[in-house]
Amino acid sequence: MTPTRRHVLAALGAAVATTVLPRAAAAHHGTLIPALREGGHVVYFRHAATQWSGIDRIEWPRERQRLLSAEGERQARVIGAAWDERGIVAGEVWASPFARCADHARISFGHATEDMRLIGLLSDDDGRGERVAFLRDLVTAPPAPGTNRVIVSHRSNINAVAGVTLAEGEGVVLTPDGAGGFATRGTFMPDEWAG
Image (cartoon, rainbow, N blue to C red; front, top):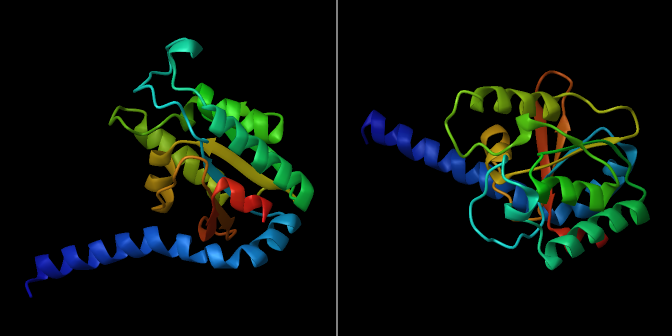
């Protein structure tokens, strides 16, 4: 096997492992919920289900953006109610300013800090590197004691930082290691938060 082919196969294997392993951790929900009650984690959600009315732009008015569907609003309510029932504390709540993300955050957690650095990474514009660095800082910095940091944004952002691909409404639990890195602990679909 040539070195180039070996490198390609190794990279492909690493990419598959990065994407599949967090999903396999779903069997560990029973251990993640108590850990989340203690705080110290970052939970990144891809926005809940949307109406899929096409591509939108941040400068467009709300009514032209892709919004949460009725199912997406239900998913966001389920997540918030489950966190309340399970005693999981959301401290900082960050969201992309796209309506679908900010709405999800507010429905689930009651508040959100919107930040343009959390808009999607679908373009290779000059701000892409800054957005990746901002998200990396959010997922590697430990949250306030006894709380969890919540981020509601887009699939492309977390994929660039953690190599995880999330479905609409899916959340991934990350644990900052205090040394500039993090561990990927597992994922939850919206209804899985309720048990």
